[in-house]
Length: 97
Length: 271
Image (cartoon, rainbow over all chains, first blue to last red; front, side, top):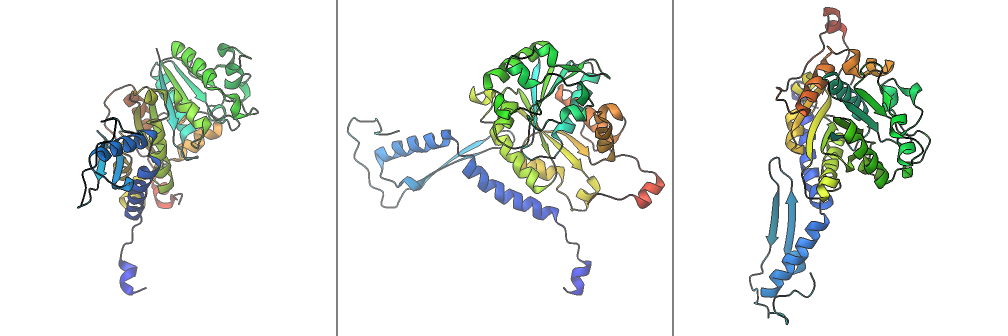
C-alpha cells in the first residue's frame, strides 16, 4: 500500500452497482427464458429454415425488460455461403414447430 | 371491489412484514378498509408485529380448509377499526394451502375490503407464489444491498409470469419500496443509491424508508410504526407511500429522524 492509497477515497457502492448490472444481464437472459422464448425460437428457426439453411445456434432470442417497454431481440447469424434451402414438402408448414 | 396488493421481496429480512403492517395501518388511518394477510405458514410474524399474537384463534388454513368462517378468523385491530388481520397458521404445513382455497378466500375478502394486503413469505417457492397469485399490484421491498437487489429482480420476473394477471396477459403494477436506506452513506458512496437500484430494477418508486431506530421500537411493542410514532421519519415515508398507492402524486423525499446535539456527537450507526 502506497502513501497515495491512504488518501485515496475508495468507494464500494459503484462496485456493487457494476457487479449487479453484469450479473443481472446474464441471469435475465438465462432464467428469464420462459416457454414463450423457447416457442418463438423454434418457430422462427422453422421459418428461416424454409428458405436458408442455418444452424440451430445461429438463432438467438433475448427478451429484455425495460422501464416503459420491453424489447425482443432476435439475432440470426446468416453464414456467408448461405444456400437457399429447398422448400419442404407440404409447402409452408414447418415439420416441427 | 377491493384491490389485492402483495408485499414481496424474494430475500428474507428486508422488511416485508414491517412494511405490510406499516402500509396497512397507514391506509386504514386514511379511512380505507384494510385487511392484511400473513402467507408465511409455519413462520407467521405479522400477528406479532401488529400486537395481535394473543388474539389468534383461527387462521388462514382453517378458513381455506373450511374449519372456520372468514369472519371468525379475522382479527380487528384494537387501535383502528378499519384494519383487520388474517393470521397464518403456525403449526400446520404450508402444503395445507390450496390454490382453489386461497382464490376463494381472496375473492371473499375483496368483497369486504378496499385493500387486501398479502404479506409474502421469503423465497420463490409455493408460499410466495400463492401470496402473489391474485395480486393486482405488487410492492417489491428491497434493501440497497447486492443480494436483496438480485432477489428482487428474480421476484419481478415471477410477478410478470406467475400471477393470474400475467397468465391472462394483463399487467400487474409493480412498485419499488427501498427500505433501510441511509442517505448519508449513499452520499459517501458506501451504499447503493436509490437511483442505482431504480436503474437496475426498472420499476417505479413507491417510497424510500430511511434506516431508523423507530422501526425496532415499534415492533418491540407490537405496533405498526405508522401507529406507534406517526411523526417519525419512517412513518412519514410509509404514509407518503400509502398515498401513492391510492394514486396520489406525492414528491419523493427521504425524511430523517431529528437527532439532538448529543445524538449527533455520539450517535452510532449500525454498520
